[in-house]
Length: 179
Image (cartoon, rainbow, N blue to C red; front, top):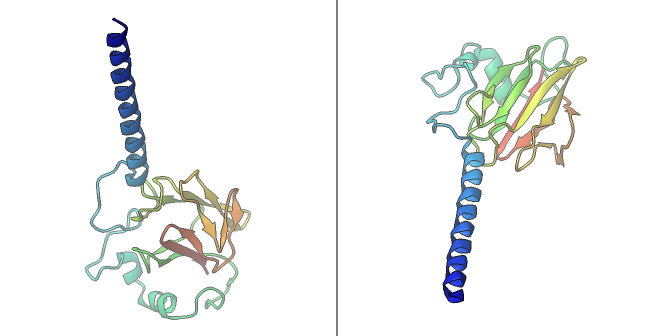
């Protein structure tokens, strides 16, 4: 009789181990995919895709699009108020060239469909980071992401002010605040 009990205990332990392995794989899969339907083209939330492959909001202002894409990067913007961030620009990654006009509301970044900027990046979490306006400046805050959020070469761990033109990196995606 003790051999039967030992055999049942072995099989029970093996079954419990496999349940644990499948649970871990499921959690990792949900974190990487964000539990969402796959998209063919990732665009900022609420911005329709124009025929040429750029968001319609960007194509409607050809002068500004040219200056941002071909002109100087962060420091020498045109017009008054050069020190005030007005636009969020994706500089590297699948959404390169995408622009979001900054307002008074926070901007969420991640793979989830309800993010302001939906990132189609394997290294971004579903709710990865948030840009928050406070006292005339913008702060970047990591939302407990798996791979971290970087401001320049530094991994951030608390809400951090973002200077104009400083690269914010989330996985393979890089964004900047510009005036």
